[in-house]
Length: 267
Image 1 (spheres, rainbow, N blue to C red):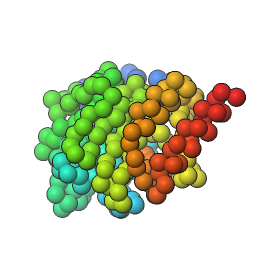
Image 2: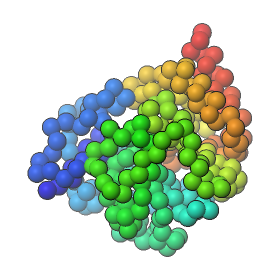
Image 3: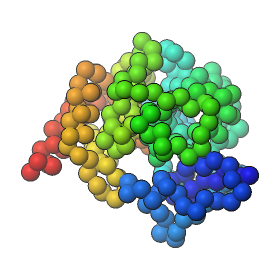
Image 4: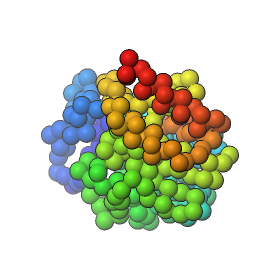
């Protein structure tokens, strides 16, 4: 029995004798099936082919696969007041990465923004000692490898501690989640996955239902996000991948981006 991994999105599936007939994540209109058709790999095969990138990203330890595999997101270790939080997830777990995390005090819980980044979350949880994985219940049906380590939360806000709050911003997925951290590397910090995606100029964010297929987010969803974030201050915005961050002036950049987007879609 093998937990197969989709080579296009990086999602790991429940153990089976043969690869699934299809990847439901990639067949969804927000994603895509690879141009050469549906292909699969395994965790063992990934470990033979790749080495994780383990390095600092704007003051936080990051972990990520090379950009030629699946979606190039990176996970970040947040040393917060409730313990160490691993934000986001990647498809490959390595002894080197686990050792790097343990050298910084280990991981107390995992939280993931949306289904495209669920990847090998159960593999990671087990490698880290069975730590809980927090996901929004609105995206429950997208979990392809169920586990007792997964904890679903509900509503629009979940205050985990004095400093850390999960926010269901929605839009990209119904349960798309951002993490607000009062005491990040330089102060208040927003980590929005790609519900609010930091764009290439690193002075704005944008809002898409599908990024690879260029489907804009509904204005009603963007306004919900705007209202939900209205009460939160933040200086930095950490995007979904390496270096795609707004360092300083994050609140003003997000406000300007809301106004720019809503004006554009109304034109």
